[in-house]
Length: 233
Length: 201
Image (cartoon, rainbow over all chains, first blue to last red; front, side, top):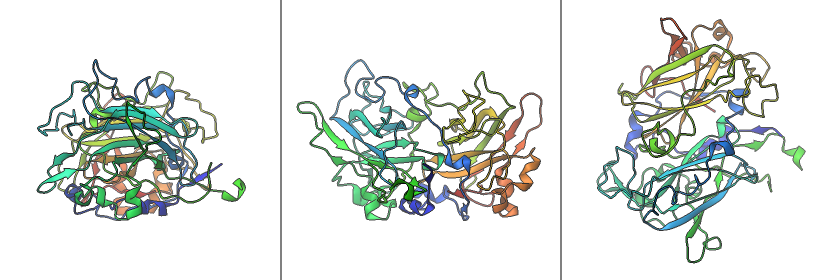
């Protein structure tokens, strides 16, 4: 099967220049992007499977001597293409703040405590059906300097590869019902309400583990459609 | 099961300022890197080259919190991806690299000169490396291509031909003087008069 990547699908993405998010002002292109046909270079992509992920890399709560503080959660879901086909054996990388809203990055100066038992980085590959799972703690909201009293809604950064270099995606997973949504220019840089909703995980009671951890489901839809749909019917 | 019912894709969000400990830790954090900026393995054939440069914003200031990823064919023009049905002479050449810019906005990749890859009509493209650029202040990564100024094939490249002539130079890395493995300079301007050409793919 051959996949095609219609550029119309890119309409779901934020505009590169989104004035509410001030850092875009000097980092977004001012000249038109050039549209081109996809060649083999664009239609192929890095293939990384099991060998890239060490045992336990998907569990951010067991990387240190003790357990991190905060609310333990399971985050899982399917990586799909635009036809709903699972994307198997693809690499997912995540990074996030700790339960207090503090990143271990040296440049994070938020006066909230670091957790010696939490790095905040994880890695997993999707299984044969495109399913993935992480165990972590729920990240806290944190302030940033974009505007007066600016706070980021709690989020987990996701980096996903998919079927080709064209399907590469870096995004953020949010938590349902966050009161900071209306005020966050990064979240609202996605102007279509339905597209915005696709960045919000759903609470998953069915896969919540009793006496242990709440579960959130986050399906990720990457670019890619069957180029010859008639053959598959 | 696929239902061939079109779904909207998950929108992109910025990589933010704090990705380094998870994606480009480079020994500075308690985490390992899945990828490095050195693509050359012991069994890699082809001409070793280094691509290096600096990333600038619209004010001409260096961008110290940028992540760059490259994807390229091996010296025979073949990709380490089963979707490329041709033989893979460099079995261990993965063709993918990742590099974070340093405090000066500088980056470098050690790799090999890629071979010719056909365009959709079967015509050879000039040797090129795909580049994706991520940073705080970028809600969606930018795609561009790196060509090499030593290649006569640039003149007939079908993708370069799409680019207005006065902007083509932004896609062409310049061979730096010196002995040893060739070094090519490729600065990236996210915005402004010298803005690098970015592609909508």
